[in-house]
Length: 331
Ligand code: SD4
Image (cartoon, rainbow, N blue to C red; front, side, top):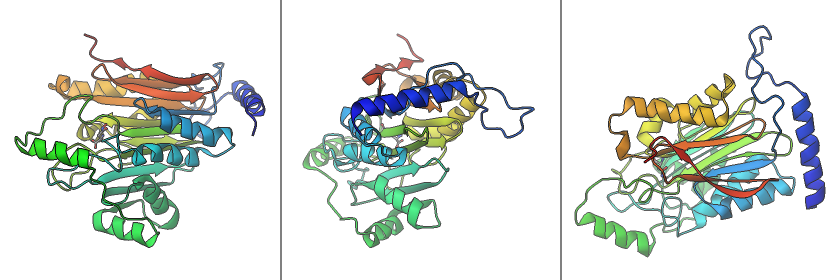
């Protein structure tokens, strides 16, 4: 579709959404609360992703602009990072575990609440696409390790060596001291969580990572765990996370944020509450990073983190923008 027509359709979609009061997530009209979205201008289609990943958000936007659906947009979008060997937190080129094995975690979730996930997947660059196959071609949600690899092989994915020379040399350097101390915003930077709303107003999300660098072999983080690293509810919105996954899992962070939006909070308010829950439970919150992003049904976005330095990208008719995130710690 030509850009002009696309923008026209977007505007029509926005007007439609603005005129219709949205009852959020509750079938009982007596207790249903009107969303805080009412009256605010819709910005769909839209894509939002953790960190400054312009290639990924541009790819997702390309899909949305060509009339594609949100599910294809998030898959194609995050695949850009999985294939980028310069991104050492995702896919090929990702940093290995402490034994030198690159193990990937990924998940995907669609507008109907279907989801697929792979954990501890080795040798396959596009973990998100294997997760999508789990969702679409199996009665299961999650496949792990050897089983996930066998499934990927059956589906025709090509096995590759994911450990690049650069990541291998860094790992060998790390082994000299073998101290496991994640460095905030640097060492474990760039896990990609992405949410998109297509022109029909349908939401999907994906999240993919090589996890914490030099983790214990077998460790799985938040990113492939539905509700922790990613959650989408097509009635309400979506949320996704980056940072120290263990802390996100403990609060089921992304699910929490979507539920807070269901109760009427804006994406920004919901992300702030999600981070504050983690801070409240951790005396040592200054030592690690968590970043959440969220989008609601109307295309409003938000992001919040513990440490300054996190950012997220959006692509919509308003432009392709990198947003430095507000942080809990201000100095
Ligand atoms: C994990 N949440 O495996 C991921 C790491 C991450 O940017 O987000 N890195 O815990």
